[in-house]
Length: 71
Length: 457
Image 1: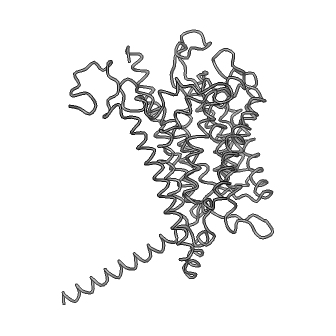
Image 2: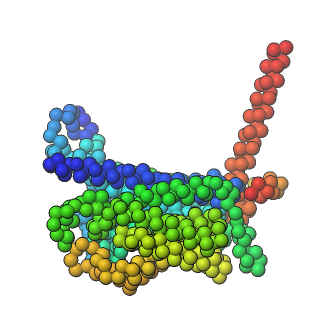
């Protein structure tokens, strides 16, 4: 049993094509990848929105002044 | 890989592009350093993170659809349908887009183009620092990096692209296909985004916002120069036979070619890269009266101006064209800033956008009548084709998509950070947490030391 179809390299390399595991499931892998990508944007977008809303109200005047002086 | 010569050529080509990719990584390092150096301390980490995350987001999307666009879109949508045959081997589920002993080069070509994609997105990132939401910029990064620039590459930076065929469009080292489009896109975004707080006085006079760390800027731009070498090399085919080109070239002499498979030499691009860098630096020094950062950026703008024709120019032509471009770019930057109250934080619109545009226009006159391609029936290089190409790159595929998406984001209230946060700095929460954590651990250590002192006694 082998996940990429080869159990040894006693082969003519001219006859060998893909050697990654789970060949035949490429479309499924792409769907998983796209979900991962879109999901990342969604998580980051929500978190940033919450963070900025919170940050609007947390600025201590003295500390903000110090930040401005710090440039 | 049948036959030793074929095997050697394949392995050499694999290695050649692989090295260019490593060099081009330095462009991104340079952009990160430049942006962080130009931003104020209270925004450092967000500025850095904003640019770093361009890398994975553009990479995965360029895998999912960007690379397919390049092969499927050369004539789409106005001059033919999608090229399904060429596109099919570059779809994300194709077995050639993976570990495959029958295809040794697709991944390396993909990466070489991908690094251009990072550059396009990173150019936009620089101009919007200190006030854009990261989430908004990252959507723009995906759009410019994996959609718009690669459409322009299919049209004007592909041996069969309709702009090359019908307009005689010639842009060997990407004055337009990377720089004009990214500068135009950045202009569209900053027009909607607005300037940083304090950038303009009440009477409209622009204020300089000096870089926080000039040394980071300096090293950053020198790394960009270095990476640009890799970029130039990546735009060439290093060694190919007339038989493989299958065009009009006769004889059996192998050659290096540009992206259009028209002949050039590595010697030519080395001469011209350095002479256009020099022309740009010298002109920028004079026109900016020795301003260090404009001088450095002028070197880059000089190369970008000459890049469209640097496969063919004489080195002295490259130098003069670079110098002319830099003077125009410098004057135009300040005119646009004053006239339209636009805040291009790192001068990206000018150095990339205006320089790329001007470079295309100049090349149309200097290279008038020169063949753009080795294939029969293609238009030769001409001013109308190059000016049309510059407008397509800067305005149609750059400015318009950037402006429209920014307008949508602005209407939804997700483009710009709140004013309170802009004033206190994007890193305020992190600085605050850092100071608190520092105070807590110092107090804990002192307590531990005191306890041990007591125990020792």
